[in-house]
Image 1 (tube, rainbow, N blue to C red):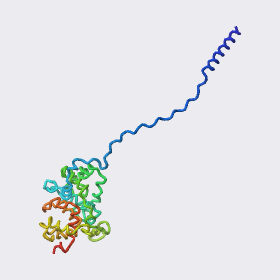
Image 2: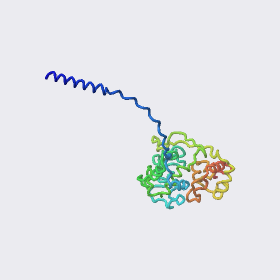
Image 3: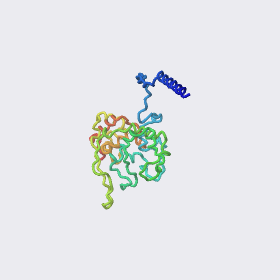
Image 4: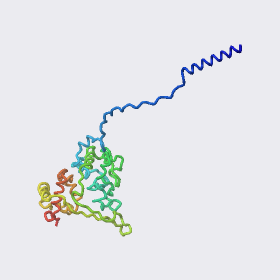
Length: 311
């Protein structure tokens, strides 16, 4: 019996050995094949719109010249307003754009650097803003500028305050878009019409003096009309201005100044009224709109021999 079992075990061993010899051990994996070539690129997507984004239809339809008129006196019919000045407890300068931002849009950095306000002993008008409206449009979308003008939720229109008024109930939507277009497209760079120099310290009140005294920088204008053509300016003056202002600009007293004197002493303001009008005077918006024409008019009116001061 024992011999039979040993013989069976041997047979089983030989059978297992035969199987191993037949199948062999697993070989190593083969190397990966090379990648196939890249597929062709897909079609390019459509270009996005550059900042400040798509131009709203309301902006396209807006009138920047009327926007300039509104910047001065938004309630007048010339500016698209009702023709009735708001009944308020505050003077108009507390809700006129130009009173805080200046005719040149540079706030207290240039022509209004010495203009006093509530904090500098002139209670009837606000302080001039530090904001430079000439650079603001470059950092805002169209809608962003619209919202800045409206300033919904800001101070009441009739408050004597230095903060921005809430125009949401005062200006029409068209007027706001007109102002937006004005700020983006209709400014004239001061350097194209005149040179300005501001010297001295920033304005403050010296309370060590008796009485309190405003200390303000000095503003000097020069080279008025230097880039214009005087002969062309004289022709423009004769055709556009002489009927009202007279041949030499002395027919109207403009706050103690002739027209020529006004241009020479307040070149920061004269261009604005020539381009955007002066409500109530018959000087409607759009009288002179081309910068080159303004330069030529300035060149002519800078000549004090032809356009003298008032006596």
